[in-house]
Image (tube, rainbow over all chains, first blue to last red; front, side):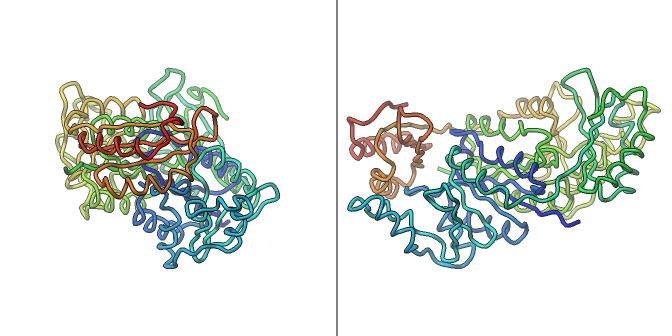
Length: 243
Length: 243
């Protein structure tokens, strides 16, 4: 079962310097999960053309979907379009349809600062949605989204269904056993059930459990078989709860 | 003025799948800022040896300090040590001093699952602190920190002062002007003040201001000169506040 993969590229000095807390990667983590897409990378880089270009080149080649956040406004620190054009070895062009729309909105006020919003990588396609006044740019498998959280959310939620595939199935078991004492058993199970991802997360913050073991797969039958095996390896009397 | 740079590498399927929200990168963003260190990358990768190895190799070569979070426990999904060893083309060795400590704590209970905690990359050094029972491993410029937030925080806060350099100085100006209308002016200022980082952040969420302009530098005199220029470019009557 081929699971589509995704990467998020957040572009912005303001995130790395702590001026603004990331909201967009956080939103996409939950969204992609719910859509059945396997998120494999989150990368946050500064407002630097070379950093953006290198990141987009690598992520686009490695994952099925790439979502960029930020760096698409009219000011000098907005370098995403130039960086993505460089990633695909194309130049930045002024898109005639976008230029037409800007002129129809701004009329004589459509100066160079505003018309720069029509500048796109040479390979960009326009993704349009019924209630959008402005399209999302798509370069090959890279979706270029705005950094402003309200706009990012609105754009992503409108286009999310195009990414939906079969869901992930999961189980979680909370135990009072020590992680040291279940490690060997978990390793055996992981080797025997390659289609199930098994996670082990120790908890030191509260006394109610010591380890949370998670099982996850797109194959529900394999998941159930793995859970059955897991329950034979754990001490039933020390299991606190299951989810 | 050479500003030391840093990267954060978070290792963990649980972050990418949304089971656990990252707390460690978020902590370091604020800490590094306060210490005067320029954070240039945050990268989140799965529990995969090759992904960790490639990330560590690149980040270690590109930045002054690298901090890894997670993947250092005793279970099969803890691959950070193997990944970092691969990054530095060294093998994993059982460290005699760490093995000795584990045996003194666990006695006859020091089985293979526990002794694996003494396995380190061949080039690892032990960073010890007065109130630590267990050192932090350092491989060249890579600090290997635990993923459990309470432990991550405790370790980092104990060693933070070794990274402190001169602070960043900042100003922020909030204006009711549109970003389109100040873009050309900001570009001129950015070109004329290369030692000052100038950010422009539009606000659509509240009506009290439209753009926050930030200035930042390690050179306070250059920063003040840049602010003076900025104030001549902005419409004084539409400035809401300054910070």
